[in-house]
Each structure stands twice: as C-alpha cells, then as structure tokens.
Amino acid sequence: MIILGLVVTLAAIAAAVAVILGNTGEVHVTAFGHEVPGVTEQWHLFLAGVVVAIVFMAGAGIAALGFRRSMNMRRELRDLRDEHEESLQTLELERRKLQQALAQARRGLDEQPSVPAQRVAPN
Image: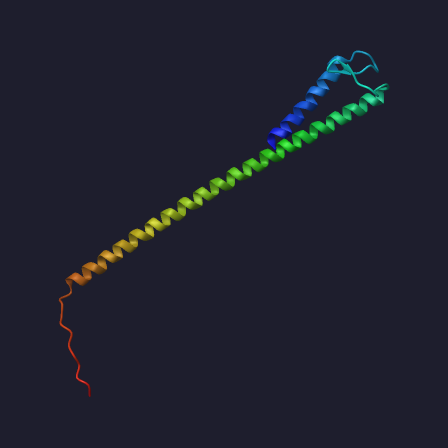
C-alpha cells in the first residue's frame, strides 16, 4: 500500500513538472512531449492542475495510511514480544519457587524418623 501511494504521488509530481516545464504559451499545453487535448483556455489548465493536485493528495494519503498501519503493526509486535518475555520471566520465577518448595519438602521427609504405623483397636 505504501508503494502504491508513493507511485501515485510520484506520477502526480511528474505530471505537474511536465506541464510546468513544457508549456510556454498561454493555452498550448504539452506533457511528456505530447499536446494535451481539450485544454484550450486558461480555466482548462487550472482544472488540470486541480486534478493533478487531487491525484497527488490521494497518493500522499495512501502512503500515509500505509506508514501508519506499518508503524501500528510494529508497535503491536513489540508489545507482544515484551509481554511474552514478561510471561516467560514470571513462569521461570514460579518454577524456581516450586523447585525450592519441593526440595524443602523432600528434605523434611528425609529428616523425619520413620515410625511404623500403629493399629488402633476398634472399640
């Protein structure tokens, strides 16, 4: 989308430059070495300028939307990476705590003397 916007913008700039540089007479308009048909009066030339300006603005708008979308995608991806990294760190911390608790529980079982189970007589 960015490329399309830039191509349209560059085409509008090229058309405007060609009209400006290629025309020395008041109503004789040429672009890219060819006479532009239908432009016989000054308002025709003005209207052609308006069309070129509209095409330029459309191209610049398309490019801006593409840049904005690209930046939003990059920001979202960066945020997701950060969130993923935080969750990995949290899980690693929890794993270490659980390993310590398990080690303490195993040490506690090893330290207790083993007492044979006693049977209780029924009443």
